Image (cartoon, rainbow, N blue to C red; front, side, top):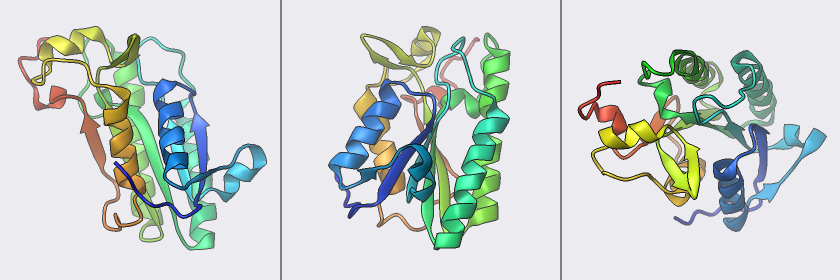
Length: 194
C-alpha cells in the first residue's frame, strides 16, 4: 500500500518489536520523517506499540494511555494529528488462557476509544488489532490462535503494516475510535474453544 505523507513527523512510543519497526519503515518510505526523543512531541503521527504476545513483558497500560493522551493534547493545540495503537486482537475478544494479557489489552482499546471521543475531530485515534503474525517466530499472538483462524495461516508483518498505513493515509479523514482486526478472521469466533 502506498500513501503520501508529505514529510509528516512520525514517532514511536511503547514496545519496540518487528511489527513496530516495519510500520515505522513503511511510514518513512511513504514520506514520513522519523522524530525521536524530545522531538517526539512534535509528531504528526504517533505509533503506540503495545505488547502483542501473551507472556511478554508489558509496560503499564495506564502509562501508555497517559503518553498517548499527552500527545493528543499537543496535536490538538497544533490543529491535527493521528495516533495509531498496535495492540493484540485479544483487546476485542479475550482469551481464556491469557486473562491478564486480555484485560490489559482491553484496557488499551477502551483508552484508545476514549481518546478518539475526547480529541476528535482534530486528532484521529485508531488501533490495529493484530492476531497471529509470524516471521521466523511468533511476532504477535499465540500459536493456538491458528487452529481457530478461518484463513488457516499466520499473518505476515506486511499485512498488519498495511492497516497502519490505512489509518495514517491523509485521504482517510472519517475513521476514528476503531480497531481494525488483522487476524485472519480469528475474532469471527471460528470454533473457538479457548
